[in-house]
Length: 143
Length: 143
DNA sequence: TCTTAAATATGATTTTTATCATATTTCATG
DNA sequence: CATGAAATATGATAAAAATCATATTTAAGA
Ligand code: FES
Ligand code: FES
Image (tube, rainbow over all chains, first blue to last red; front, top):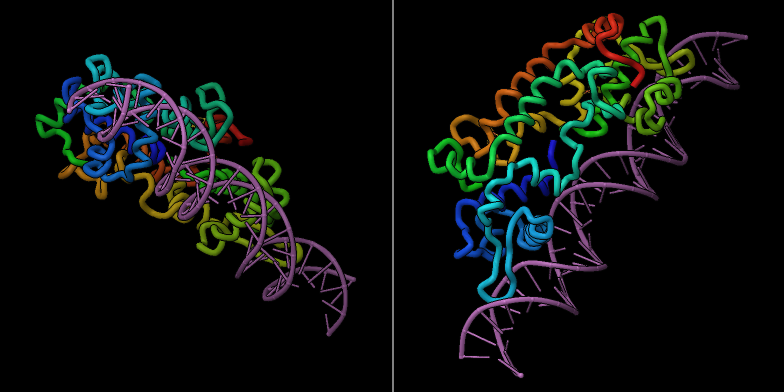
């Protein structure tokens, strides 16, 4: 499905979405523990996300990671794309070169529609929407 | 999603479903090439499937792999379960311990319904049904 | 400007998955 | 019943993913 790294990254971003702001930056050691991911590992992922502008950071004392206004308007798939690369989730279930209607593998029709709606849902949901859900009890934290 | 090994295994089983029978056993070297999987690799997978009774085999001269009547009444998920283990596909998208409605992670509602129908489709489709699809041009081979 | 606290860059190690190799067992056939 | 053709059992190697470690850079504040 998606890599372990992507899952960790999403967990971290959600944590930041709920707990951080421009005025309240959080450093990795305070992120790693609550989301239950080894610190050096999540550090590397956060650095990658920051480099790709999906999250914000400043270094030095009082520094840390946080989500800007722009950052909370991203969707989850953008995170996955940065960590795992573009294609993974839309790849053919049986690893055909191209997954499409023209040359479908035998299981294509069994999974394609569901996969598409899943993807639409994920792409349509912004980080800030997820935070609302959590506040309304529709999704549970911590992870 | 599912492992490479599972994909290979499915491809091999489909190949057997279309080309083999009790009277027409096929040996690994004649399976490996058309499905585009290295021979020692698919050999190991086929052996595992045979041991778990998802496919049939006999050894010695004139031996090989084939699908019995019982074998073609299996569904694809059974193959995945043998190769990857039970849970993978129904695991929480964010790796929570348990994925369920009672304690859903924030993305649970975005993916759960689609995932469930995908699973239902895969479990409801027997190997022999897939062969029919292929014969009717609904799914393409080779892989 | 000096010290210190933080992210960053880079890379090493470990674990898992994928791939390959080979000796052993079974079975059909002469 | 001997021979050879096939799967089987077992394990070795290679590649990728996950995890851990550390030296460097940046920025705040004394
Ligand atoms: S072609 Fe295989 S899933 Fe689309
Ligand atoms: S709880 Fe995460 S996907 Fe169901």
